Amino acid sequence: MMSAPKNKTVLRPYQRRWANDPTRLALAVKAAQIGYSTASAAWAVMTCLARPKQLVVLLSRSERQSLELAEKCKVWVDGYRGVLADYFPQQPFVGADQRLAPQSDFGAPGRVRAGQTHGSAPTTSILQHEIRFPNRSRIVALAANPETARGYTGHVVLDEFAFHADAEAIFKAAYRQTTLGYSLKVLSTPNGQQGKFWELAKQLGLDVGIRPPRQPVRPGNSKIETRNSPEFRSSNFEFRPSPWSGHWCDAYLAVEEGAPIDIQAIRAGCDEDTWLQEYCCQFVSQASEWISAELFQGCVSSEASSEFEVRGSELGNAELRTPNSERVLYAGWDIARKRDLSVIWITELLGDVTWTRGVIEMAKMNVVDQVQEARALLAGVGNGESGVGSDSRLPTPDSRLPTPRISRMSIDMSGMGLAMVEQLQREFPDQVEGVEFTAPVKERLAVLARRRLEEGKVRLPDDPRVRHAFRAVRKSVNSAGQSRFDAGHDSQYGHADHFWAFALAEAAADSALNARPQFGDASAASSPVFLGTPFDEELAPMPLESRF
Image (cartoon, rainbow, N blue to C red; front, side, top):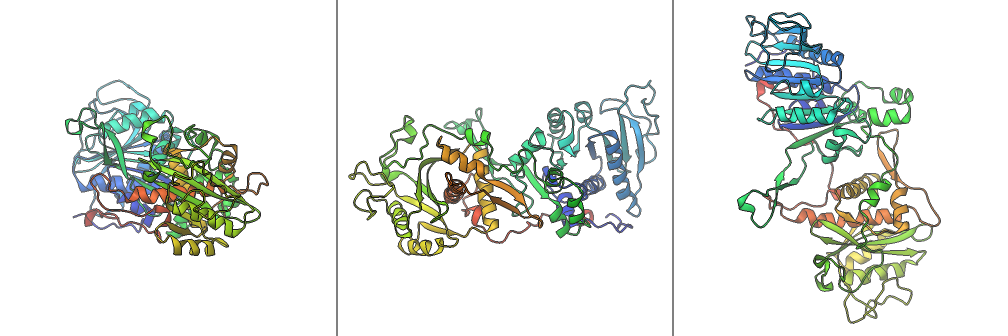
């Protein structure tokens, strides 16, 4: 049992989540100067004290920063009564394959001058800072490069990884050195939409600058290729849980959890890009544009359409030829009456990919006719059956063929939409879901829509109206740290109405995707867009004697 600490350092909740996370692979997107390096140092010390013969390698951007991190580790060591360790700063980097100097009484090497190893001439200008414990555990802090990352096998911390030179090679080397069951903890403030840290953050959905509803983030199942696996003869893939956990903490969350930060003073002293990236955890690059031109174009397909097709699919891909009676369609409806467009976005779910099958615009259409349009879609009826007038936007080339029925429609119920939603819910209680466009709900809708686009799970029509609406969405952060998504009013293209209709349709389809049993998990889940109050997940604690 370890002795109680004699100093008064107390980690805040976000620091404890990071230090106590037992996951082998962990990543943190965090604001500057909120104490994550201190928490990483605490984790390194506790790892060494908890078990003998542990090695924790701390890789920082520079030698000076590695010395700072080693000093933070020393503070933690000094803070425990009865814990003895030897500290040797500014020693030459020797790697795992070179002989160390004779050991002291506590298993630490004797002092060696910078630039030389024991019994040899100077071999390197790279310096490391080492702490050795009586149980033969060690902490080694040094500047990061591919050579130092490959120098030791053990637990690795990549501190401020977004700013490491040659980050891709460093990550490969560090990951290789931890594959025998050691931990890899990666943390940094953002540094633009580029580099390995950004790629890792994207995989965990931590690249959008929005607080996750629960922490740590636990990604869903990942598709793993199993080409050589005999038990998967009919398929070359299986789904396995992701090994990563994610942490996110901007300046606002840090203040909520006790950090002594003056938000207003910091914001007043820096430009907008610095504020967003260093303190709001946003990967700044075309920062305000939510859907980039490249992201939109990457999801455009000639087999997607903005013209709603009543007939069964006649596309060249055999998998897409489905009779109307068997097609599963979802829809999102962004309601407007006078100033903006009222748009219904229709999508078909094939596997885990949504294909746009129609975009119905209703410009300045009266409420009664709009409801009739939606009713016809939900009922799945064609010409002459829906009661829609001659000005209906539903094309019906063959009245003998039924219109494919909308399985689920998510509708904007803000303002005038409330009465329309209530009316349709009485007629189609299992198909209609009202969504109140509050700021948190719009945030979740926008995040879900962009995540689906980034994953390549969406097929969009090459339509200039749709393209303009997607590109018009802008993200900003108000003085309270809350994200806001909005677009300017345009007399020709509306108010990003197509995007919000698309986002609602994706949320409707996502409910069905989450309801499907996953590999190794038969439980069903509802759409993440419409979850209740967010909460922090309690972590499985470390043993009592090694908790912070």
